[in-house]
Amino acid sequence: MTKNNVYGGFFQALFFSSSVSIPTFLLDHYTELGINQQEMMLIIHLMTEINAKSEHLEEAITRKMNIAIEDFKIMVHTLQGKGLLTVNNRKIKGSTGVYYDFSGLLDQLIELWGINEFKQMEASNSKGKAKQGKPDADPNPSAKLISLFEQELGRPLTGLECEHIEKWLTATYSDELIIEALRRGVSAGIRSFRYLDSILREWEKKGLKTRAEVEAEDQNFQSRQNRKHDKPPKGSPKIKSKYDNIYL
Image (cartoon, rainbow, N blue to C red; front, top):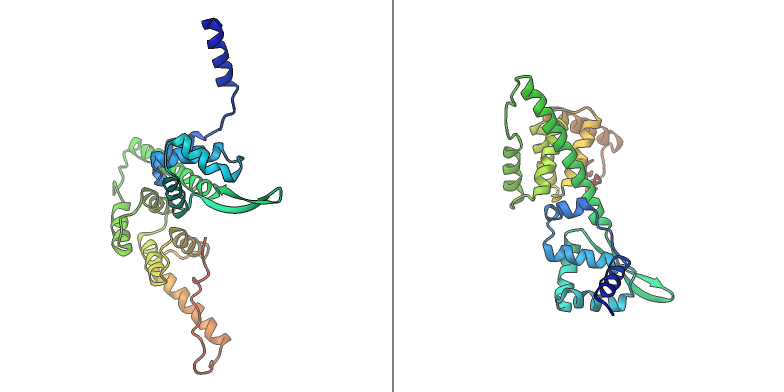
């Protein structure tokens, strides 16, 4: 076999073999989701082997990545903890197999894309103000809020969470409303940014722009509840907060 024939056979095998499509946006931003390089490679392999028989999947991927089965399981567990991956059991032709669901990864990519769009809009608006000779009053209005959130939550915020605060400010939520939403979330023991976002959007829907207006609405809500339950019997359960069931 000639050298040219060898090259020809190799290129045909290379370019006509199966392939997997990885979104460029994921490759550009996976570190912002807290994914390290080895976890990203595992995600690519899982996407590639998604239709493989589950009983051979771990063996195939660990062999290709040159890692131990235990390392594979640890990375899968870590991705689950980050809300990026869900492992489900499903029946395939009468037998039960494992299915790896990346819906969580997709949700976080959509959220990150939205935040990036907001940042681009804000940057564009800032350029417009600069051309008009109107500099921003505060070059970093989110820094104070980020510091307060880290103090209340007792941990550093992730890059995605910091960008979420910037999105709230871009959406014209006032500092005092954002802080009040944080206070209520901490009091309820719920520290999810989606929960806080749902509270802010609920206030926006009702046209509430200040903490005083929110407190007045709470009093009206409580008064309506008291009228519905006039003189409740002693020992009856306390009326739940109207925010208890809000969760995005």
